[in-house]
Length: 67
Figure 1 (cartoon, one colour):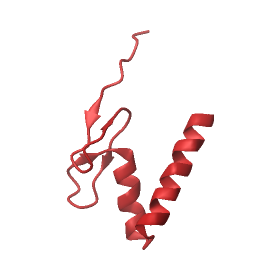
Figure 2: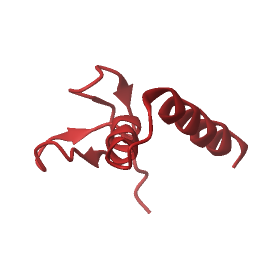
Figure 3: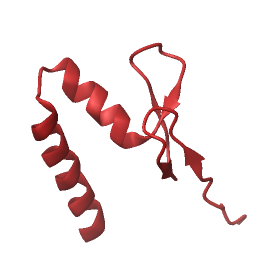
């Protein structure tokens, strides 16, 4: 089986480098953004304030570290 090498991308929205699957921006339905920015955009559409968005993203990161 061929070994997959992770691709590093830079998010055009926040400038951070990331690996893994990108998210499709809700702003234009064309731009690929990092998973965190994708989560922020989704939470924003639900009316969740930025402070709580960051708490949710940090919880997601903690969960991924445990798994």
